[in-house]
Image 1 (cartoon, rainbow, N blue to C red):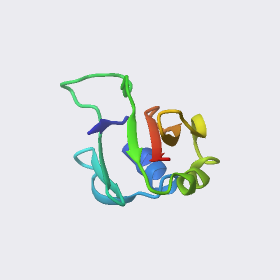
Image 2: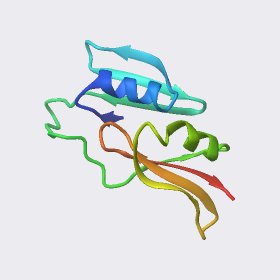
Image 3: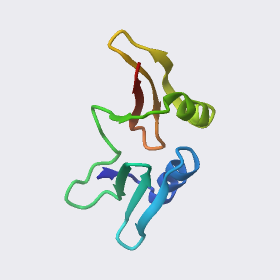
Image 4: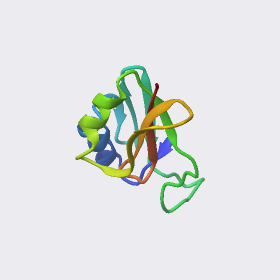
Length: 111
């Protein structure tokens, strides 16, 4: 469950840029569930119990893919890039982007 200050903008990013579909959306609850292939992600508006101004994550979401080059071609012109696609010595071909909330999303495929 990831926090977002704007569910609508987040839904638009994940559906329009990353090709996810909306599985469930409860605007009155401030919650949405999105899916692409075998990946499910949920977003919620901040609540009174956590009271954090902006979404915060010190790590990243790492998404293993069988078609990382195709995904790169789909998204590279539509979002902020952290690092472009490349092969790494540890045996992965991957890239990193930021979503509309500033979360780092990494996509990788074994070489």
